[in-house]
Amino acid sequence: MTQPDIADVRKLCERHRNWGRWGPGDQRGTLNHVTADSIIAAAGLVRSGRVISMALPFDEAGPQNGRFNRFNPIHLMTRSGADVMAGTAVRDFYGGNDRHFRGTDDLVIMPLQSGTQWDSLAHVVFEDRIYNGYGADQVTSRGALRNAVSNASGGMVGRGVLLDIPASRGVRWLEPGTAIGADDLQRAAGQAGVTVGRGDFLFVRTGAMARARDAGSWGDYAGGPSPGLGLQSVDWIADREVAAVATDTWGMEVLPNETPDVFQPLHIVFIVHMGLWIGEIYDLDPLATDCAGDGVYEFFFCGPPLPFSRAVGSPVNPIAVK
View 1: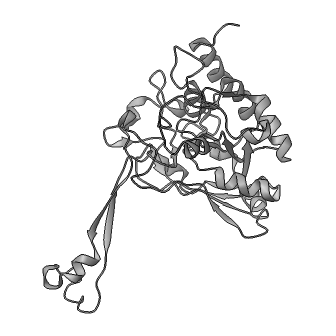
View 2 (view 1 turned 180 degrees about the vertical axis):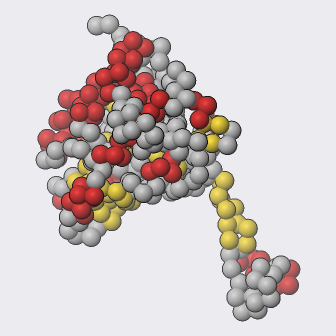
View 3 (view 1 turned 90 degrees about the vertical axis):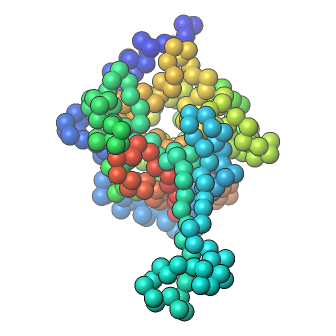
């Protein structure tokens, strides 16, 4: 069997390119599949009121190891209780009105894609272009002038569907380097009793976080060999016109990549050409446990990015409501 290469990636790009589909000025990509009617229908999936977060804690214990200039969040206090106890040593923050009232404040220093996050449609450049054919010069030293993550701030709401690939195979997790194809996605959907369709937010669990937890260390989770979506998943995902895809891995697609001459080929196809929103580092284990418990793998999803101006990614606290 011939190993896939850049020619195969270009063919997938051509087959699934959405440039101009929603107009020459579009910056929302596959979020255009979400409609008012689909959101109303998704709200009907709330039956018990259970709320499940898919976010990792944003702290120094996160998965980053410094690769690709990413580090774990640094949390600092700018005003603390100790400052209050210091009395007159604390400067007045409230214009003389703080005799009975004192406050605490803090700040966070972090790469926007160091934890649970969305990639924007400006995150990946291929052959000098970003989504919808905009030139790479639209991502400047001041940030993304086109395709910024804020374009999704009002649209990450709808029907969520979990496909638990390890559970469908009867294993605890997929081993690093395992590529997930169309057959795997369809099998998991069949076992879950769901049909994935237009405007859905698709969550694909590989068990990568469960594996790290079992080992007691993140190890090379961030940037190392990983299970993930493979080239054989592209047509299946594109044909269903989903709004977004998120996984429990650092990079969404299988590593090592199936294309030795192209790094992260699915990012090129999905983000640059399809305009598909990609979520990474989602903690899908609690959701998987809940879905296995009640046999319901669909839910109301809400997970908009923080509307950072001109940002190419954003942390998020994605929520499933059942």
